[in-house]
Image 1 (cartoon, one colour):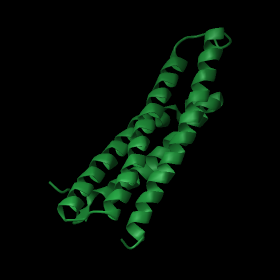
Image 2 (image 1 turned 60 degrees about the vertical axis):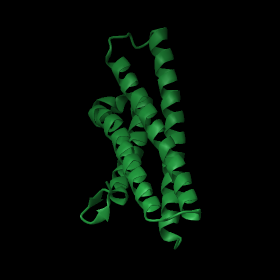
Image 3 (image 1 turned 30 degrees about the vertical axis):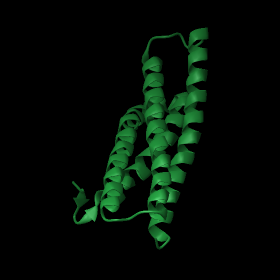
Image 4 (image 1 turned 90 degrees about the horizontal axis):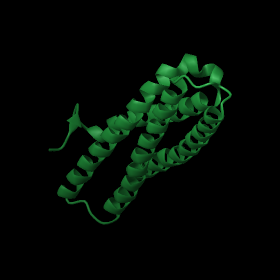
Amino acid sequence: MYFRIGGIPAHPLVIHAVVIFVPLLIIGAIVYALIPAWRGRIGWAVLALAVIAPVSALLAKLSGQNLRTHLINSHFSGTIIAKINQHMGYGNMTLWLSIALGVVTLGLAGYLWRTVPAGSSESVTVRAVGAVATVALGAVLGYYVFRTGDTGAHIVWSGI
């Protein structure tokens, strides 16, 4: 079944959620990991984004697969499908990396809410590893969000 919203393919509408929520997760998770003074102010928002961003990426992936199937059934082939496949590859990485960043963010938040003495070696080690993982995942995820959007925009606007 080909999914449409108001007569428009669902995918171009659904991706707007990814464009909003995934970068917000990246920024929020990095700020949460690196700036302890802000954790109390942004904690709930970051936790919500850790769930919402990967779900929006999943919905974009599913609607994109649906659109690709529709295009193939409409006899599109060759260059356009190859470009869509490249776009889907970036989108798949965006999904998996957003899940990974969401899990790391939830894990770090769960750890920080535990009662662990602030200066203990466990606390320092876990916080440092959590911060490094968050920044690294955020940077790589930011790259894949950009590449996914860029390849998708080139498909739409290249006149193919």
